[in-house]
Amino acid sequence: MEIYLDNAATSFPKPPEVAKAVYEYMMHNGATAGRGAYERAMEADRMVYEARKLVAELFHFNDPKKVIFTANVTEALNLAMYGMLKQGDHVITSSLEHNAVWRCLKTLERDRGISISTIPATKEGFTNPDDIAKAIRHNTALIIFTHASNVLGTLQPIREIGAIARQHKIPFMVDAAQTAGVCPIHIEEDHIDLLAFTGHKSLLGPMGTGGLIVNWDGKIRPLKHGGTGGDSAYEYQPEYYPNKLETGTLNVSGIVGLREALRFIRNEGLENVLKKEKEIIAYALNRLSEVKDIIIYGPKDVEKIVGVISFNIKGISGEDIAYRLDQEYGIMIRVGLHCAPTAHCVIETEKEGTMRIGIGYFNEKSDIDSLVEALKKISGDY
Image (cartoon, rainbow, N blue to C red):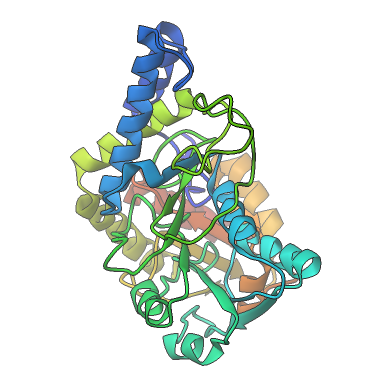
């Protein structure tokens, strides 16, 4: 029996309702949303709008038309950063960012001359909000933070950071790739101006889905220009949402699947999803500690992390272990830098990387038992 422990990359399995909804749409509708007045097209448009409403509801946001669908969280982050930042702007970010943020910022530094302040974190991945306040300059145009590190799992103090940003009238953007669908996020109470999310991780939806929630009145230039289904005679991108930032044919089949995933989470209850994952995380931290010479990175406190646990075993290659776990035991984990080299600099694993398990809603304690027993056997061979 195969065991999937890479939910931080993408969740698996998905709720059966998700696959069924995609199949039903493709087999019995198949029309483009917002591109026709015939019944199927209008039905497709209704499905997309229902998904917008469910996204807005999950994050306690009251304006579904400002839920912009993208191909993934990376596109959402690029859309905001390229659309907002201009020559000479200053940005504050964490030292734990995924390359979806970091590479974008570095490219803008090179091409537009922005400056970047990277806020230090402890080896467990904790950030002091006071350091953010001290880093603010007269030209600070954006504060952007991951909600939870995809290497350490550490939750960042977004509400405190958002309050600082709001006090200084600086837009605050959150990368919720690792938290959307499992951690409570409140757009208004957390003082979030822009929230980037992906559909295929803890939201339990299909790949190719994600989005940007815009809770900000400032100017965002479109990343793409093209057809929106309306105002076709107008030569430029419309100024109203969602069409301003959402162009071209939408991934309606994926969005329909995401709609069902959001309904599943709503029916299960976000608090129940979080409770179950915390139970598995706590169990995993306890059982992994039994493995000889293991090094577990990040906090060992379930209240301070999501279901991401990175580790190494002294003297043994992580690549070798991950390969044997897959080939000999049918256990799938991630190994390497996890597209977040700056986070590895924090824990001094930038050369070797780490092994990482990503715990999801459908994992059970028995999965952890199998992993630990396999690790004990493998490490005993060296």
